[in-house]
Image 1 (spheres, rainbow, N blue to C red):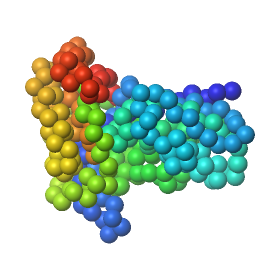
Image 2 (cartoon, rainbow, N blue to C red; image 1 turned 30 degrees about the horizontal axis):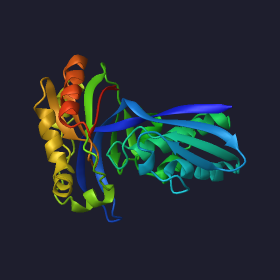
Image 3 (spheres, rainbow, N blue to C red; image 1 turned 180 degrees about the vertical axis):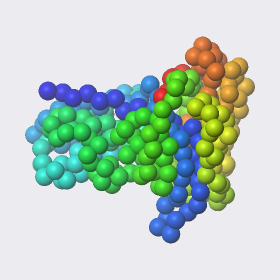
Length: 278
């Protein structure tokens, strides 16, 4: 039996860095949604735990025990006392080190899949395992719109009345999250809660406090934001996570598709997709 799970791309619609903690982590306030594009995970019982990676970005991720998807199998197995071998097939559709939570989404998809493969009950019953794998894994485990605070471990699910129309653009330069956080020295305040159910107003009022440090490391981030802002119907252009992927929020799906085509025509070597997100 093969279990299939979808690992949706996580998009930070805003990311406020409130300050650095004594343990070196940063306190955050972020609104995240999950796109209809992402990686694919297939799990099959196997004599030993192993991973095979295919897809357009397979060469950019490890195919050994350092992959977060394999670590998810190992850590959940240890927590449950199950030494079962699992073959993980990962179809890597998202660029790596791109600010889309790809590795965390893969690990979360593995946890969800293992709950089905091993018939353990809901995957949400393993919050400690999810947290041990990384700050983004708990919110990726739910894979639904949420406000996240703390270092990412406090997840408040939210409901968006309508899907958001996004264009995701990655210039092809990987960005290491620790490097971007280390370069961030200006901290801001938490977001002000919206007075409307329309998330667009809240998104417009937000910011990404890592943008400046990312641009200082990868100037193409500035170029990406500029070309998104120039597109007709773009309401907000902002970097997601620690970059280098940026998103444009558009007023209609048609506008997002038109923007995707226009940007891809100018930058055929960039990763550009139009997608809805919830």
